[in-house]
Length: 128
Image 1 (cartoon, one colour):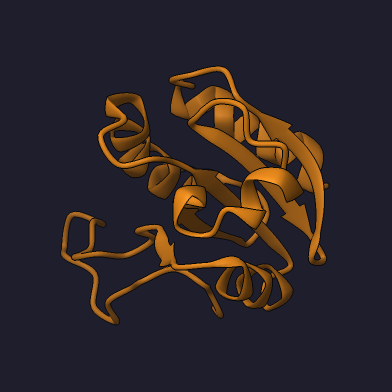
Image 2: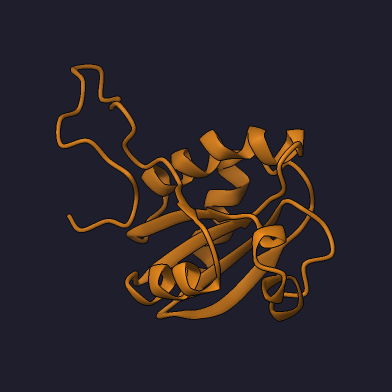
């Protein structure tokens, strides 16, 4: 399986892994564009440092990558590190989740903490 998540080749006996499906840190607009272009479906969290809800979503989106029907890449980008991203994606609050399919944004959510099963259902609905 080809994936755009940070992963380890070996999984543990209980099905977990050390680092598998952890979100990829994206540093700027160029990283983001390359990341989504390389994936059939990609979920990107726009976050800011110091945002507690943003930090609590990191393990959730890793779980969504494992649970989604689509082969899903997950990434995170801090738009304050690249201000044009704020305007391009109309970032008004964080966390903002943008789902890309074939390199194009197809859906977005900015509702604070989203439970994993709800986020997985949302991804499956829009990535189909």
